[in-house]
Length: 312
Ligand SMILES: [Zn+2]
Image (cartoon, rainbow, N blue to C red; front, side):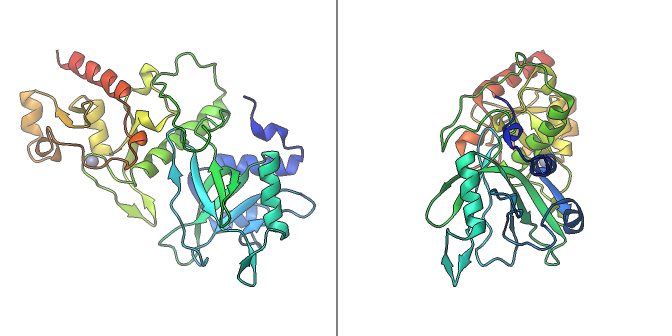
């Protein structure tokens, strides 16, 4: 499928959307957004550039009356987010210019940027750029925004439908460097969200100024073996230590999502003061609530075979 941005005819609008896509999943200081993003200096809520029928971005501040809702993540890395329309005298008014510009985006399938002020930052210094999203619906109270999947040139599966898991990417056409440079950070962001920014094994999850520290999105089927980065189900969030130990075959998970530790004397002696042995045979503690976001059995099976191979 061609990039949906290619059909946005206004070049300036398209360039701004590209920027938002490149920033997806990253925190940005409000100061830099004021400089680089059209309308950010003055406009809160929904921003529609004058002369354009389309909204360019929506922004959620912590001061907003409606509580911020965490995005719901889907296995292809897309996400849904509910956004309140603008009102007049406390009532939703869809005839307002701003609301109409979002409805127009829905009609013509033009994406908008989604920016959310970061929690724990009362000074309003930082926004998380969620990325580009399509207006999927208006449910009477909210616009339902659906974020681009990790692979932005594949449309997200409609509604709540779960796409089949494709473990390998070997047969994909060659990607441009620009595409690759966008994709891995998106994989990290969605895996991090799905696991609530905590190591799946030890549940470590420090944050500094709202940013998780020392966490990594590990591939269940390794990247070098063609394991996919397009699907959360080939991912698991681990702290740096447990990621190194996972990649070094010290441990793995079985198809019931229990912790398996290598049967190696030296490793086990060295692991005594660690979480690893205490959790052996037990369910891995931190997993996404939604079963369709957990590691896929096909991916786990592949890893288990490699694990046995390594210790044979
Ligand atoms: Zn850990």
